[in-house]
Image 1 (cartoon, helix red, strand yellow):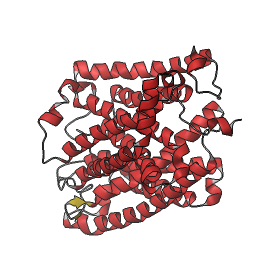
Image 2 (cartoon, rainbow, N blue to C red):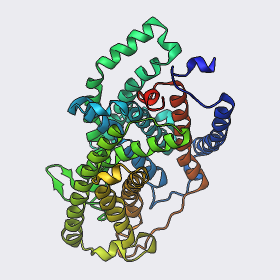
Image 3 (tube, rainbow, N blue to C red):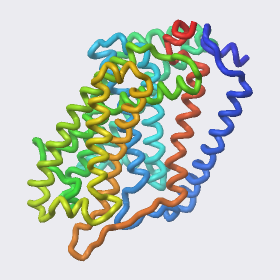
Image 4 (spheres, helix red, strand yellow):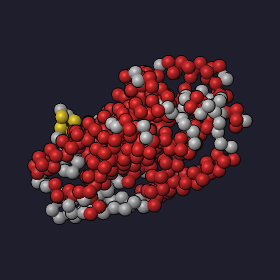
Length: 410
């Protein structure tokens, strides 16, 4: 029965081997679920968050996974709106990764709320003056869009495809997918930006506060830009990792090369904008608030100047320039290194915008705040990783995620 579900013309590992891997990952998943239930049943006292760190590890993970999932909306935009047809061979997997990232983000928020049964309050009792309300609406709507984009892929399963209704439904949904791609790009632009805007408008937290362009702080645009730039790198990275695990060529070099080149230009231009923004903030905005650059970086080893270099240079400029090189794009190890550095850079950016923003003292009598997550926070942060591995495993085994797989391995 298992072989009848596998896409026609491709080979998969024996079912016992597959189930053994699933069992190992499921053990990690259950550990995370146990920690999640503790947080829901006993409350947020299971965490090490405090009056300084109301936003902590979970929110960093949430922002990071949303940014890394940006490859879905940007690849969809390039494929359906710009018309880069060579990306048709990776768009399915980009949707799967985006679905995992956004469902994980919503799961993390459900844990962070502490009372998930009251999550509907966000929509029924919306605070129209809060950027987070707009984020909640756009996140939910874009997850619905990703679900709609994921459904045709599920309906292409060999057994489901034999059902006439499912076959025609999947075909018709494919025909109008450009509409959902455009909708997803619109929704993503605003929720990615508003996540950055939350910190940018907090004038009481001068590390994150930025000057405004019309009504939006500059972090609004930088967050959207960085997600569109680095999200495709995460798609490339997971694709190459999946190829390494399955020992199969899954996506052709043309699709990977195109996505990597565009990402290289996006990252490089983002870094330039980031440097300009940082210089203006450090030497104009911060001094107006009574702070110097040393106040933000020089008083604590965890948040020294090294973290700025790690984000902008190691995780920004270096991978951006690497991806602009055709030699790097055609060398698998160098390509993976560049993609990994880009993902590292955007994760560091989200880390400092959440954790460092909260750690820095803003009153004369304050000191640098320290924080270390509880094991429950760590377990629930790893939970989406295990969930993502399982979903990718089942999608690769039973769904035609990679249109080129058969011809590349024949």
